[in-house]
Amino acid sequence: MAVTETVITTPKRSIWGGGFAPLKASYGKLMMWFFLLSDAFTFSALLITYGLIRYSYPAYEGSPVDFVFAPDKWWPIPEKVFEAVPFLHGISAPLVFVGIMTFILIMSSVTMVLAVEAGHRMDRLAVEKWMLWTILGGIAFLSCQAWEWSHFIHGTLEGPMVAEGTEFFGANLKQNQYGPPPFADLFFFITGFHGTHVLSGVILNIVIFFNVVVGLYDRRGHYEMVEKVGLYWHFVDLVWVFVFTFFYLI
Amino acid sequence: MASEETNHIQVAPPDKAKIRKIWMTALFLGVVTAIEFLFAFVMEASVLRTSIFVGLTLVKAFYIVSEFMHLKYEVKVLIWSIMIPTLFIVWLLLALLIEGESIFMVRF
Image (cartoon, rainbow over all chains, first blue to last red; front, top):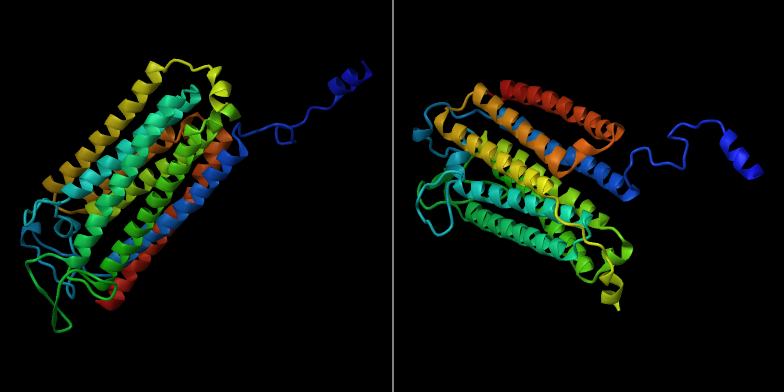
């Protein structure tokens, strides 16, 4: 009895006083959120650098129809650079391929939410199904990106460019046929850094998928790991939304 | 062994309304992306077009973060501790774009 009384008469503490979770989220989930916040800073630094460097070069003025690549004159219009689609050689389809990639990534984000939803219901089979779709989406996106890099590096057939007195096709870190050297550098850096995130996301998804299959989370009693890896996966999708706008549309 | 342990797990039935909402959000994101494509081709590059792109991107970002990442349903303190630091990004954006323009003035 004496013990109970002392408990009751304890002065009221604030929710930050300990023994209580003020943010109503687990440690792991919070740390994932703050990691993603720091990652958002990294990505915005990269994208804003793109803005800075693009602003410091002359923009192309005139009709997009007459646009030609001129590395020493102006920054390229993205829709003229990214207009190739696999198996459709020589056909101009501006931004179609990157649209497909965006669609793939958004769909894999949806399947991830569905996996999280199934996890809340302890439905192991549904989690397995949706996580597998998510992994497939991630691999599909990475394959598309590999093709796009390869095409960007090897260049287009028509319109040979004269850079430093020599004919040059495609792109490397020193020069490229599309625009000023930083254009290709930023392309490699930004889409490469995003691709690295997709790759690590796929690996994390595979690890979690394995744990789901062996029944680890059933024994643990909750599927919070699926939620955490889901947060990371949605973030990768979120970054792509920004890369898509600032690198490909504007 | 593992199957014996997992056999008594209670699987709840799918929440139809919740799943419908997820798909509706996905559809919305797809439609906004389609609108962005439309603008990319029917409009000439201009400050207005760029602002439309940025606006639509922020709309998409809002739906991804609030619905898919579930931030809308978290505690207020958590929402603010994620959102307020992103003000630094706005600052960096303004600072570096102004910087870029002055580099342009010096160069050309």
